[in-house]
Amino acid sequence: MNDFKYKRILLKLSGEALAGRSGFGIDVEEAESIAKRVRDVHETGLEVAIVIGAGNLWRGKQGLARGMDRSTADYMGMLATVMNAMALMDAFERLNVFTRVMSAIEMRAIAEPYIRRRAIRHLEKGRVVIFGAGTGNPFFSTDTAAALRATEIEADVVIKATKVDGVYDSDPNKNPNAVKFDTLNYIDVINRRLEVMDSTAITHCMENKIPILVVNLWDPNALLSALKGEAVGTLVHG
Image (tube, rainbow, N blue to C red; front, side):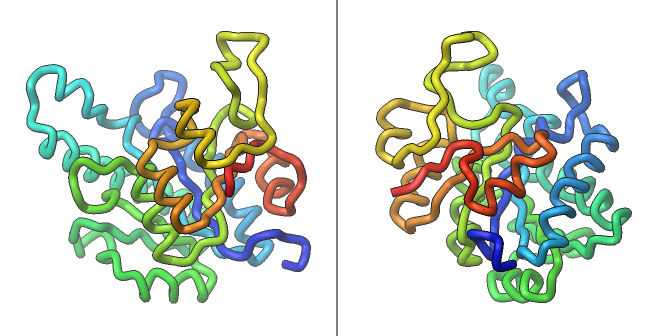
């Protein structure tokens, strides 16, 4: 534990992280791959919480484009995050990692209701906690849910998992001359409209002094190295 810069982390995953090559649905192998990487972190003694999106199952923008009510679209997305959370929980428990899913929308048959003190107690007991259903309210993204839960559980850092090695000034997959940032401050992220997290989430982290670390979760060494304070990924802070 002495080697690590942080003690309690919140990992923000996109729903697409669970999708296979098709980019849609839940791929069991992808869930297992993520679970193995997080298990390696958890086994060091760090406390791990997770917020996951729903883009692999439901894209609210498509519904809105056809005139769907925004609240209905958002609630559907929240339910989809619980499905992803359950798939991830199953992957963890097959690796013998004790896990709890907590939902902001009450559904007692499959998940615990979100209670802040209970979530913290789970983390203190060494369980991985997965937060589902976003904030429980429409009009808020899972990025904002991650920032909110990180504040509530007193996380030391929000880890934004991506498939690139940090934040760039443009899309590195399209622009070979894109420049990577090693560090950024919150205001720069907002002013430059960099796609780290949405502006509400960035502002919340800024106001509560929670750093955001953007790393490539699919690099087998990146996450552990970043948590040790090594120059990996991009650190957004004050």
